[in-house]
Every structure is written in C-alpha cells, then in structure tokens.
Length: 373
Image (cartoon, rainbow, N blue to C red; front, top):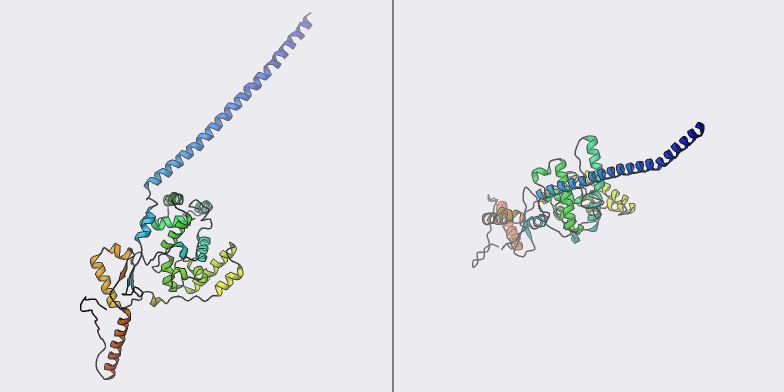
C-alpha cells in the first residue's frame, strides 16, 4: 500500500505545480506591464519637462526682447535726406549719416527678380519654407562649433535682418549662444507676424553693401549710378555677394568682385535658377562701375552746404540725417550753371590780359522775395 500512496502524493504535487504556473505567468506579465508603464511615465515626464523647460526659456528670452513690430518703425525712420533745386529734378546734395551711411528705401516689386534669386540662393536657400531660421544650417554650424570651439553663423535672412535692426549694436559683434538664441526666437516671432515678401523687402533695405551703402537701392547708386529697379542681371550677380564679402566689391577690389560674380552665377546654375549658357552670357557682359571720385559729388556746393547748415541750425540731427527729407530749394540750377560759365569766361579773359584774377563771385537774388537763384 505504501508505494501506491507515494504515487498519489507525487501526482497531487504535480497538479499543484501545474495549477500554480498560470499564476506565476500572470504575476510576470503584471510586473512587466508595471515596469513598462513606469518607464513610459518617466520618458513622458522627461519629454514634458523638456517642453516646459524649453517653453520657459523661450518665454524668458521673448520677454526681454524688443517688439518685432519695431522693424516697421525703423524702416520709416531711416532714410537719406536729399536737397533739390527749385524744379525738384536736379539733386544737389544727399545728406547721409556718417555713422550709418547712405540709404533710400525701395519696395520689393522694384527690386529685379534676378537680384532676389541671387541673394536668396547665396544667403538662405530655404527662406520661403523655413520658420525664420534654417534648422539644417543651425545644426551644421553647431556641429562645426563643437569641433572647432568657435561659434559660427548659420544665420538665415530673417536672423540677419534682426541682427541689423533689433539687436543692440554692442551685442552684434559678440559671438555668443545667447545672441543666437535671441535671433532664433525673434526670427520665429517675426515670421509668425509678417509675410515672407515683407521680411525680404526689409532685408534688402537694411543690408550693408559697404562703402556707406545701406540697402540695395543705395548700393545700386554707389556702384553703378542707377536705381535698383534698373540693375542688370550682371550687376545683381555682382552685388549679391557683397554682404558676405564686403571688401570684395567693384570699387575696392574689381577683380575679386568679378570672381565672386562668377561664383554667384554658378551657384544659381547648381540650384536650377539659370542655365550654364545663361551664366556664361551674363558673366561676359561689361559692367560699368561708377568712378570713386563721382561718389560724393555736390552740385552748386556753396549753396548746398549753406542749405545743410540751415537745416542743422533749425532741426534735430536725427530728423536731418535719418528722416528721408526731400528739401526743395530756390536755386535755379540751369541759371546757376550759366552764371558760373560767364564768370569763368571773364576770369579767363582777365588772366589773358595780364590781370591777377583767379576767383569770381556771382549772387542772383529775387529782390521782392529774397530768393537765392
């Protein structure tokens, strides 16, 4: 009887073991689910914490930054004052801020399409698609910074506009992550509030083209003696690289400027904006650059300087040099030229007759009104 009893006990134990196995599996499953749940909760918490931290940093910086709409005010307040003769057709003198240069505003539709394409390709290929900054460019610059230990660019067109207008002048020269973060936050805000064409228009009107030329219209006048609307494709391709390479401009470095023009055209070919044949034809065009001595010409200089002094005596310098005033004077420039020619002829005749005369003065005034002609 004992052997049979042992067999029965063994069978009962086996049954209990078999019955306990599903319970163990259930405990394991519950344990795994709890662990996975905890891991998901931790990861979710980290992600949310990251979002909250990022938002806190964003808001912290955003509250310290200037209002993006200040760009509109800046555009209205900064333009060169021009002094004309009585007809309003002859520009006698252009007053520009010696610290901020020459500038005249031009709407985007008056900037040739070729100029726009060349600039976007060189400065910010994804301008019309990005949120105000180029994530790929920022990532590439950050990687280079880690490798080289220096803070590099990666600035989009919108970021450059911000640096030119909204970032304090002392801070512009600082290479810091704080400044780059400010630029990115403001770039996002500006892109959210204004359309891309408006941002591009502001950029073209605030960018420095060296030689005291601020904005593409001033640059067209400085280098080619024409308004921006009249720029040729060849001239656009020569102006577009100047913001990146200021000294390699047509006046200071004509050979290097021509080389940069060729690089610009090839970049446009690579991006499909023009064909290789078109690039070669544009490069072959003769570009006439304005002579340096013509840059600061003043017509009727004594009278023009007199008008400037009167303006400085009566008005605030900020208004005179940045207000974009159009000053119409009483001077009749054609009459002035005739009077000057008569005086020069008289001096020449006196010298030929052995007289010691080298200067002459002619004053023409309307007696009833006191107008200087």
